[in-house]
Image 1 (cartoon, rainbow, N blue to C red):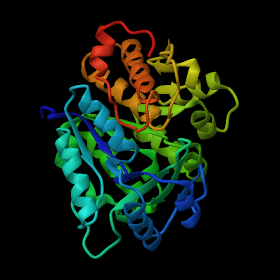
Image 2: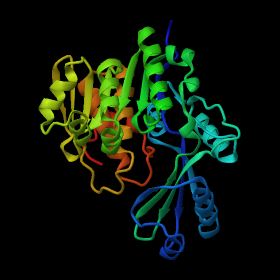
Image 3: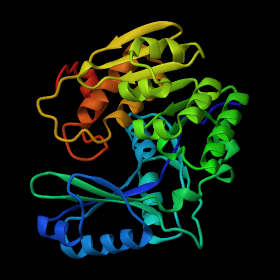
Image 4: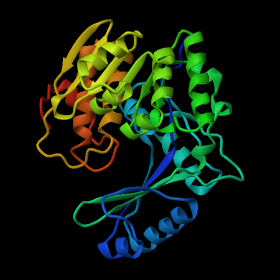
Length: 335
């Protein structure tokens, strides 16, 4: 069966609601400055209403780590698809429309009579500090029934977002998608997403990586945590025992990719000013996966990932604002 999509992303469908507000509203709503807090539906709907009343510059972006990666892949001109869970509400419809507007094929079957669409309410104060209140919403109902076998089979790579690997049903959905992909001769990629996620589900993540994953994305701390080791080299050798290609970001030290026993060291792309590191790992994965879909070597795909990550940290938001192809073709070595 010929592939229709280069990458299929599966992850938490979260609408990012970004609102410039003053400190007085932050205090009035009792939002902990500079933090990320998980909230319930009542709190989410109340904050959303307060943001609309207190800010005239609200921006809504269809987000979530996996969605951001898929958006970056699409921006690089690579065929992408996305699977997530939204509710049958106005926010869910805007999320779906936003993904479609980027040329991303998506199967977002609206949830009826359940939690509202997830949203991350991001308060940006005049000092540039971002304070996030996140409601996971409809995502908590994601399970095996949400995996479209035909979509997985028609995608060269299925990319799994670690943040969604939480409930038993979500874990079962990941395994189902991976088994379908492997049986169809496709590849499975996973991002560990966060050290907290790894610590919470270490044994399950190890089982997933050892038995179902072809390409693993992680930062240095996440990979060390996965195997409870103190040395990156030991961790890379451990993951390679399963034949898994590992792409490990190391902040200003760049990244390391180990594939087929070969280690590729990739420099970071310097930037004149770091504005916001949100989404850097997501866009690194986008650059690597898109680069491989274009036929680039792992070394060159890693460089494209570094370039995409560098662009994203020069501005607020987790979606690219500058055409990465233009940067790559210009031979840019710094931003």
